[in-house]
Image (cartoon, one colour):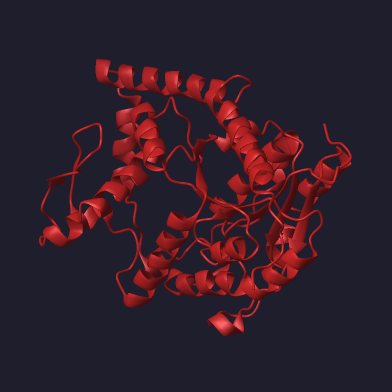
Length: 349
């Protein structure tokens, strides 16, 4: 499906965060883009690149225009052990902020890269965990698209909690309240919204991510409209229609060899439970299995709903499906913006 690149062909530069759960869907995005005749460059680090080199080689053999650029990771500057370039390489998650900081120290290298890339980049697709890319986008006058792995439901809830200053108005973290503005009545506590440590360093980094997302041109989601229609609709309105649901990204890839190659050899080190503790108890697993296998009407309805959603998800990524259409509309939007703005691609003074 690939072809020779004319000078005006779109060129998307992708920035995955250095964790398998972030990198794999970004690689699926790369494949979707090249199938739409877009040139794709993926920016990562040497050890992360080795995990996907065989896949990219097969892409290129098929005629797709996709490139993998390796930048040197700055371990020491961020206080990481030598060679640590991925979240699964950390000895302890207590140093995870150091990895986020190191990832965002790539800015100067990326600026130099953008001065040399040909054809000039048309768009940045950045993991939300890499807020520095908004500065690259602004300097080179190209749109930044934030990639978020969460659902429209989750982000809409967070958006309304922020808009209504809920956290400032509720002092008791265990007090239940109704999330304002969303289609359904959902009751949660402030404690349930806290996903990251509360120290000032994390708060500062989260504020940078939030500011970068708000300053971005748009957002793409690993979700599909049929899964959460009301929330996708309302969140799209909130984002002024610059939101595209193109998931489930895993279903866009039918290459079984590729799926097997893109993992890691040893993603889990066993025997650490007593040292670090566990978050999921065996009782929780037992209860979840019992609920799934329940032979009552409720269990049957649950399984029926799962099968229906599975069919919806498969249809969404097929030609004519909602996610396939959103991917096409997203690329068309960037193409129209590029033509409309006549982007010079020269750095701002």
